[in-house]
Length: 76
Image (tube, rainbow, N blue to C red; front, side):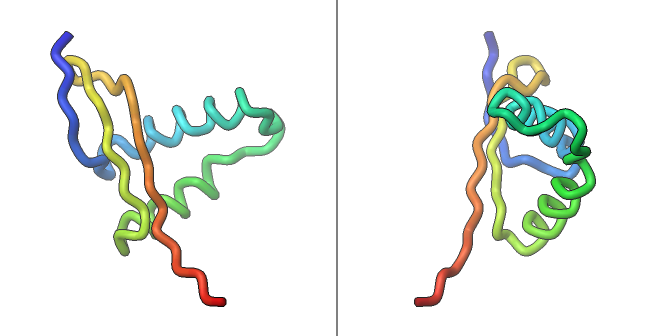
């Protein structure tokens, strides 16, 4: 294994979204709902303004793990 880590870029976003949908399906998201458009919109917007950041783990160029952090401000 040759694991490297780096920040998620637009280049990996389609695969990242596919992996995220697989995770959501495992957690019970319904198959008949197309999650791709909403997730693409969300990640494009929030990666652009740095309110979402993700690091990916790669083994010889293949994504083997991801992390993600959404930054939000809550006002009481």
